[in-house]
Length: 476
Image 1: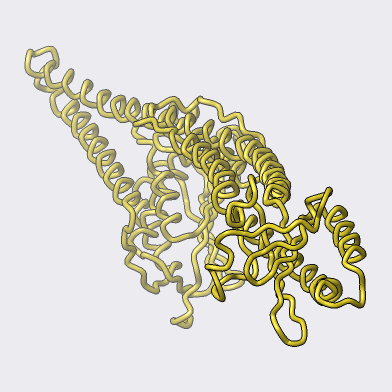
Image 2 (image 1 turned 180 degrees about the vertical axis):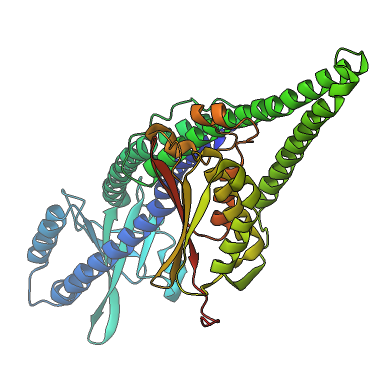
């Protein structure tokens, strides 16, 4: 079996790649989006401030109602407080006020290139503002109107580095969140490893051992969940397979023994007759023994074929309605000669003249034959075998009860195993194959019916099996 445990490591690699992808997305995609959002937000904020300045103060530069020095002081204070650079510009690009110039904020200078851009100019821009700054700035322009005429602009400059700092702070928050999620998911991964991966690895190793025939390999998984149930089921399966393997070896040993013994006996008798060890006048006697041994082998072979057919999946049953009472009478009649020799009688206690059941008549006849044959083998001379039928809740119960040697309590659970014989039976029944009760069990299993046994040593044994009462045929 090819060992492949790469799936878990692929999962770990995918997990790490996912974490790296999250960081990459934050730094390469989310970060620019965040920066753009902050720029627009800051531009809108600065535009409101610039518009307020243009409507409140800037007009006084073109009116004599308030002194220019007072306006410059207020604008300078606003610029200092907000860490902003505030310009007031004419339409031709001449700066008539600069809050960043502390010595003479009213000194004039012209911004080259400002006039060339004209009406296409946006209300804000990023960069060095026509080369006027050594660092990138966010510059927002608000028009100044006086007597319905455009007189100039209020321009507010804010360093983009401050926005980048805000962006970086937000990135740190996002990365910290990603890190927390990564740590939590790592904990989940560790829990998953302990709860799922490690038990599955143990189960996989166990199944590999079972495939190699080592059914004693333990699965050290003690969990009260589906995986624990799976491990327990596999352990149970391995135990069953182990017993099945033992049963297979025992089966082969029993078949070999049951075939070898009569063959050895037959070969010995035939060689003895051929070389004259057995005189001609005794040939008939030993030929009868050989004939009995061949019948035993024939019976064993037929029983093996029967069991094999019953174990084939999908074996069809010839289901019909028939009178179980008549079937019992007919089957018991076939043992008349044997019973006469052992002085055994039958006591038939049957419910009604007829009692119809639904089953495979031929196979139920074999069940009755095997149970009665088994009862006769282990019954004492001058005893009675009781055959009884009864019904309850549409179920018919059939009982075969003898007054024989009984079965020890410890052996009751083994009597339906193939080739199983108790020590009592090995002493009493030299011709038995140990397959009769196995065939009975298989036939009733095929019918989805049950069989029970009650036995007491030196008192007797009773087998009781069930059959469904016919629903289509009334008792006559």
